Image (tube, rainbow, N blue to C red):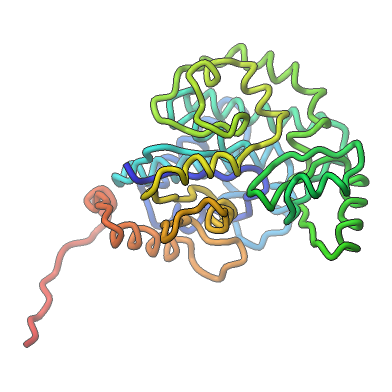
Amino acid sequence: EKIVFLFPGGGAQYPGMGRDLYAHLPVFRKHLDRCFFILSKYHGLDIRRFILGEKDDPAAGAELEKPSNALPALFSVEYALAKMWMDLGIRPAEMIGHSMGEYTAACLAGVMSLKDALALVSVRGKLFEKLPPGGCMLSVPMPPEAVRGFMDNGLSVAVINKPDACVVAGSKQSVERLREKLEKAGIEGRKIMISVAAHSKQVEPVLDSFGGFLQNIELRPPTCPYLSNVTGTYITDAEATDPEYWVRHLRQTVLFSDGLEAIFQKPGKILLEVGPGQTLSTFARTHPAKNKNQLILATLRHPKEPINDFVFWQKTIARLWVDGLNPDWSALFKNLDVRRISLPGYP
């Protein structure tokens, strides 16, 4: 009843983001292999080398900036990590996704099947690549009300991550002008690793096509509560099962900060980021509505952190155990050649 899963969105991906766990944890590997199979069979997409390849492969890094690769790869890792946690007895009481991460939450809540969810993220990525080139997104450490004073008309506030942090999207030229204005004011903006201006005016040309594809997707009421990026509060059955909701989700501002605030209104929750990196857990730790001593953890390392992901994950599951959760250790070790040994007694 304590766990909240957090699923990151586009820009969190990096080469090798699942390699270490894939090598060490059969309980993770089986779910990721299932995603590999579906993407290969139905979409002709091989994302293995992005997830299992070398961490510092520049070619893979460039390929992962393409939405048609990035979104299916990111979704697959998030889904496999979540199913791994659930197989180990760490089940969410509720969930929140960030942009595309809401698809992962919806799939796990039963709103859409795995096959349909993978089809949806694949189509979303392909449609993004049909947009005119030159989209860009800039993370800005400012309240959205303040950053609007620096923005050109062609820019949109795409994401509100915290009351004092947002993301602006638009053309590369407009975003670069904004970055220069902010720099002169002593504010550093950071470009996000994605080649499209999501949640902005620039995606409007593909909304009809995306809505048409959604007519083929069976949508069901969620079986687990999760927060909506569109409203910033818990999604309703009517919203989750309405194709037009998912069209709006593609265009409208991501109200992630409001979603975090709704979670923080319930004391005692443990927030667990389920995906590559630690972007969302960092937002949560520094959100002004966070409760004192609230436990916020990540499943995988930051891409620049010099640690094996399996070692990082071991520290996370140990911390959950220390905090009173009881993972199903038999599920973790059942396929491994391990056994208990007797320790010598000491006075």
